[in-house]
Image (cartoon, rainbow, N blue to C red):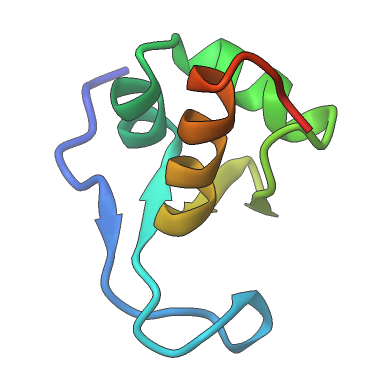
Length: 78
């Protein structure tokens, strides 16, 4: 069980949004939001943070993570 060094995915799956949209892995989203990876997976599983699950891995659009951060700073979560 080692640490993963790649946090960004360079290609966007066609089912997940606009071409060129930057995708974040769970650990990158956790760092950006100041949460643990487990909390990020919980937010994704409860649909509070939109994400795409591929096998055991979660991917998040950078714009969705930023949007979640801004709404959290505003004092509420959609």
